[in-house]
Structure formats: C-alpha cells, structure tokens
Amino acid sequence: MKIKMREMSYDDVLKLPRLKHKKPLKPSRFLATVVRIISDSTLKKTKFSYTTERMELVGDQPCLILMNHSSFTDMKLAFGIFYPRRMGIVTSVDAMSGFLGKLMRLLGCTPTHKYVSDASLISDIKYMLKENKTSVLMYPEAGYSFDGRTTTLPRGLGALLKRLKVPVVTVITKGAFHRDPLYNMLQIRDVKVSAHVKCIATPEEIREKSVEQLDALIDEAFSFDNFAWQRDSKISLDVPFRADGLHRILYKCPCCGTENQTEGKGIHLSCHSCGMRWEMDEYGQLSALSGETKYSHIPDWYTWQRECVRRELEDGSYLLDEEVDIAVQVNLDGVCNIGRGRLRHDLDGFHLTGADGKLDYKQSPIFSHTLYSDYYWYEIGDVIGIGDNEFSYFCFPKSNVSVTKVRLATEELFKIKKAKMRNAVKE
Image 1: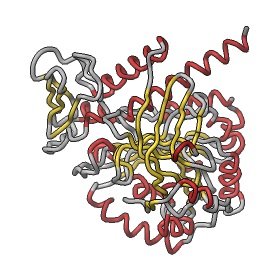
Image 2 (image 1 turned 180 degrees about the horizontal axis):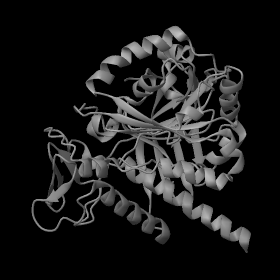
Image 3 (image 1 turned 30 degrees about the horizontal axis):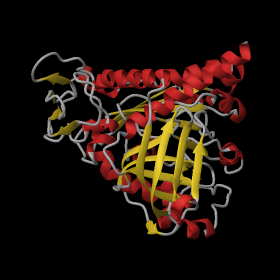
C-alpha cells in the first residue's frame, strides 16, 4: 500500500485547509459486501478459521470490537468473522488519505491521529454505536506489533468501556503476524491463520467492575507472544527470507553491545561490528553459529534492548539527534514532503526543526504512552511519527537509526516521568 506524496514548501503547507471533523457515516452494505468478496481469496489462502466464546451474550446488538494488530491482513480477517454485521472502523488519518479514504469513509471508517488524545473520537464511537446503531472495530494497540507481542496499550480503556455501556468483544489472531511480519519487508509467508473471538464483558458486567478491573480484562486478552506460539506449536516457516529485515527489531548486538550494526538477511542475523552470526530456524528461534546463544527467543532479546534503553534514560546518556526528511499531513489529501530538518529526542521529549527555522515543534515526554514508529512506511522507509491533532510530522532518518529504539525510549521515558509525577503528588 502506498500513500500520495507531494513536494511542497512548508509555507504552502501552512496554507492548506485543515482536516474538518465529520460525523461517521453508517457503513454502506454494498461496500462491505465488496470488501468481504475481496477478502475471500486471502481467507482461503490462509485457511482462516475462528472460534467463539460467550458471543451468545452479544447477539445482534452493537458492540465494541477490540482486535490485535498484526499485519495488513487484519481488516480482511475482521470481515471474514463479522460480515454481514455492520461495523464502523476507527482508522488512522494517514490510512484514509486520497481517493481510498473517501471509499473508506463510506465503508464506515472514521479518522483519528495515532497516539494523540482525541476527545472527538470518543463522541464518534458513541455516535456509531447509538445513532448509526453499528458495532465499532478498533485496534487498541494502534500500531503493528514489532516483536510479536502486544504493542503497549494505553491506560484508561476501562473508563471508555464505562462510558460506552455496550458489550466488548476481543479478537486475537494467531498466524496473522507470521504471514506478514512488519520487519520482513512485506514478504508474504504461507501460514494458516486463526482467531479467537470472545465477549469479555457485557454491559451488566461493565457496570459491576471497576476501571482497573476492566483494564486488567483487556490486558489479559491482549497477552500473547506470537514467536512463543510458533515455537510451541511447531509452526514451520521454512522460507529462505525469514530473517530479512530482522535487524529492525534486533538492532543491538548482545555480544558486543554495538547498535545499528546488525543485519538480517536470508535465514541469518549478523553483527558487522563483532562478526557474531545467528541462524533463525523454521520455528522462529535463534541460535548462535559460534559461542553462546544469549537470546534464542526474539522477544527476550527485544526486552533486553528495552532494559538497556531504560538505563540510558536513567543515567541521562540517551540521545537521538538526527537529520531527517520531513513529511507533513494536515488533511486527507495526502502528505507533503517539505525537505530536510533535524529531530532531537532526549529527556525533554521530541524537538523537530526545519524549513529554515520556520518549523519548530516540541512534544513533551508525557504527550503519549508510545510512539508512532513504523518499518518501510507506505513503502517509503522507516519512520518516526510525531505531532498533534492538527499537524502530523513523519520523519525519515537519513542515517542508520533504529526507529525501534526511539519507540522503546518514548515508552520508558513516559513511564519514568509519570512515576515522578505520581510520587510528587504523594509527597
């Protein structure tokens, strides 16, 4: 999938009309049928199946559907499960750009900015449920999983459930991540895909539970490890490109500690600094070709990297200061390339400058619980996305920088700052 990109000066971008809020449309039955038909080939190729639990408690009434986000396949799976049930769909602003966005709006999609507080989104969800009388599909992770586990969830989802007062359904997939993992450069694998669909709470149960208990319910539903499932279920993916791009996840060598010198290619991951090499087997596990295998399980390596970033933040040594290409989005007509600038990320948050000093954007460390970072974004490149409800800034590093590390740093810095704020209140 690609996105419309225009070359434009920052001055001209500032003159563009801003995105105007519109009430969500009731989904077109015709378009929903078209999407379901288009999805059929993927559903057959993946031998898709699903199981249900407590869905008799939902019946035909509108519900909130929370689905994990693994790959581009996810929406097709949702239509395979729920069609002909009408669904409004919460979608990112960039995904609704151009002519496709107009069709998506008719399909019932409503745009929002990833990881940005959006009060209008809550009213839009209530409108879809109460006025349009449709279910609402949303991906609470918002971004695709990097390491096959849950992308960090926002706190307060339980409060949203309290306000909506409708049944809540979770959809957790198996195999969707392995069919098209984000790090693997859009190379499709042949793997069976399944899902478990469960009503985790009825309106009565929501009323009886606290916000914390509801958050715990969602956390439990979204507790998964796709690489562990592959290993334990002996799901063989004997493809010659299975390690392509693996360095996007595993950017730091556990042997020499060097960053951004790993390379995943074929079935191997190599460190160009110390020469260490690992082989990724058909079950998604790593083994060192010489010496000790410190992390055979990819999520364990990823967790170690998170711990390293945390230490850098705590001792004050963490810093990103890079030249970037900058694309800006202010409406649904696409994104505008405004040229180069500089992105800095430190203990004070993000600071983006460009356009000969005319662009000067700062983002607090407590602005968001995570970061919109992506691999091979719309087939352009690895990206760091920041911004607010008016401007979205997509930054493409010019040097060999890990957008994974920046996401980890954003998440850990948010936790550190929030903990300090809580402690200050207690004192």
